[in-house]
Length: 288
Image (cartoon, rainbow, N blue to C red; front, side):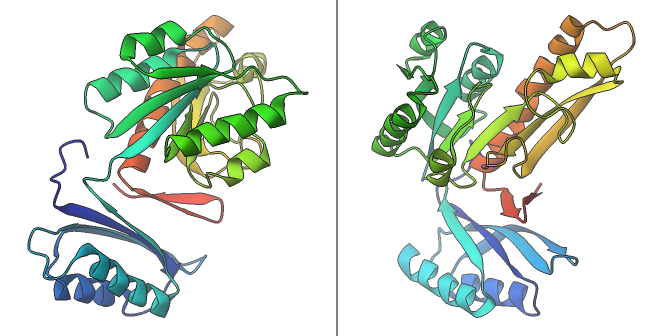
């Protein structure tokens, strides 16, 4: 959260469901002097998986952060956990990828300026120069990597190198109209968020609003998901819809859809930054 006290931390846990997980985590936190502020948990009985998000206060910690992490790791080994701990003072660094449609870019930058997104945005990447004035207005570095079929691999290699150089934690595809390669995605697993302009799994791929108009749908939607090697099929973080009618033109669907894209993408980005999203089996658990 943007106003989160610096002496707080968040622990996100995924593991096979078993007895004693809650008690074990509470005990190790209590034993090190941490005070649990809130906790949320979920069990998927079909997958046999357990998920928990714990936010806790560190101001009276009896040891140090390294010792605490080691102790949590020991519990993690016992329960075959995938876990991560983040501290309020460790601000994530986000890069935004954009093409010519700039509505999602504007929305993210304005929300960031307003303090809604607790991160740093040191870089905007594009395959076109069009959004450079926007980046300049916000004082953010803007890099253009023109993409063709012949140059795609080399350009992506340059992009990844730049992201590594700038210690980027999260990549956001804010209507970036390029398909990322599997090699690119492998560098940032579950750390690339894409906004797709339809209510997936309906109308995957290009021009979904045009196809929705041709189909005469009564709802249009937007979907924020993690990018994977399967186009538009990554784990879904958030979705929303708006009603349409027979009176709506393609332009009307585009207008309604863009409003949805802004809000859905912003929510997904905020939830990721706040460590509220756990990924499993091409699905997500999103804690309130």
